[in-house]
Amino acid sequence: MKNIILLLFVILLAVIPFFLQRDAEFGGADGQAEEMIGELAPGYEPWFTSFWEPPSGEIESLLFSLQAAIGALFIGYVIGFGRARKKYRSKE
Image (cartoon, rainbow, N blue to C red; front, side, top):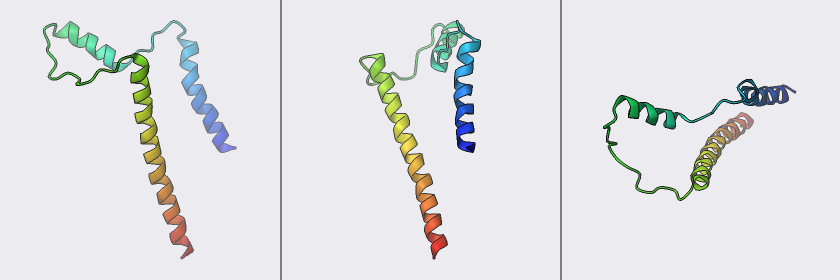
């Protein structure tokens, strides 16, 4: 029951801002940082450029999601391995 309440709380935290700020633009920090750099130092030259640019925004989102999924799998594996090892040691 506690997990269901926590899940509902997390969902509310994610959804409430969309109702409070209906016409707001939820942009990323990268775009805002790029705009500020352009305003503060118009002649700024980046130190390096990407060696590969994804062909579309969908591919970029897919790669980002894949990266997040791999990270979540790794964290889940480490936590699960630790719990299983703890359970195994308690049986000895």
